[in-house]
Image (tube, rainbow, N blue to C red):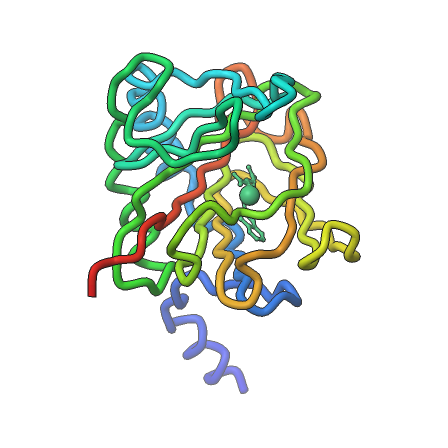
Length: 224
Ligand code: MD3
Ligand code: FE
């Protein structure tokens, strides 16, 4: 028995394994990024913000300002306009292109997405006030619905909710913490989901506090 235990301690840990969520197609990797990787990624994001500063979007039609700020990296950015939601290669705030997706994020996609093409969009959500939240919605603006959405959380933890395929379906809550990665695909790709609240002071990563969520998305169907 003792020798068996000693041998087990010599076995290197396997790579991070996803935890069971109860939703087929949703894999959660708690602590996928360690403290050093989180700090390096935050630095790359802040550098990109100099080119594409986060802005406060407004709801289509009503013009109601959101409680979060957003920006994008990649060939395509997800934007809210008076007439709906669109992917656009132009940053309409300053007329420029979006900065490139940081290499560390392309690596995460390659490791967890199990998809034969790279992401085209990294949508950045900044939960920068105690009131910041995201209502229940579905991500359905992508032609490549066979690709997963890969989410990376940095900074303060949040209470995240996953529902069903109708807004009224029952839902289940999870906590997402800094360094966690979630992969949402397969049979769960079109589930309703949202962020109920951020837990202030739960992380010291982001200067001034708050939460940053990155979602990597494949928008167009890759050429065969
Ligand atoms: C579950 N962002 O940007 S990411 C979004 O934390 C968005 O900022 C949230 O929802 C955030 O659209 C959640 C994780 C996520 C993304 C897509 C999903 C979870 C999902 C699609 C279906 C079910
Ligand atoms: Fe979403």
